[in-house]
Length: 205
Image (cartoon, rainbow, N blue to C red):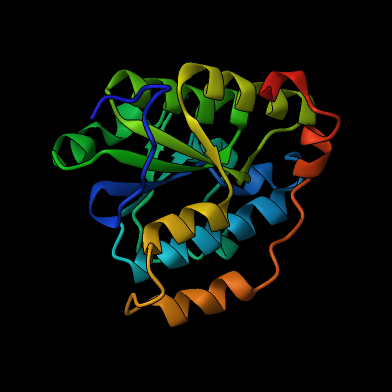
């Protein structure tokens, strides 16, 4: 299904994948709201595992930027090393092996660099991109804001983690709903989004 601004952007477990972008040790003290971003991404990963949504993890130049932070809870995922800003070249083989794939749920850093480049490459492939806004950040809120606006202009969907989780579940009768309900009842950490959207920001009108 080609991504477009008129698409409904429905998210289904059987045609979705979770991308976890470059949440590494060297970014810990430079990224705005880093602990909160990682916490929300970990929440998405827990839900993905419950719903059997595959997840892929990258690390940007790990020799210099270090490994993925342990609190992401990504044990069992094999990180793919990259130098390209986009995740897509490193994950090309995985993407090609999933003809049923329609939607990518995207978490990580930095919003204006690797997340943006990944989004554009995925959209160019005809995939829908759902940027998990409370699981993406940058070194500055200005770059974060502009990157979110840029991705939206290009056709990506901006969603919160809980909004995407409930889209994936769809029905309170889902066999995993009680386990997922426990996750969404946990308080979501404040990742500074309200400051970006206050005052009828013209970038999001």
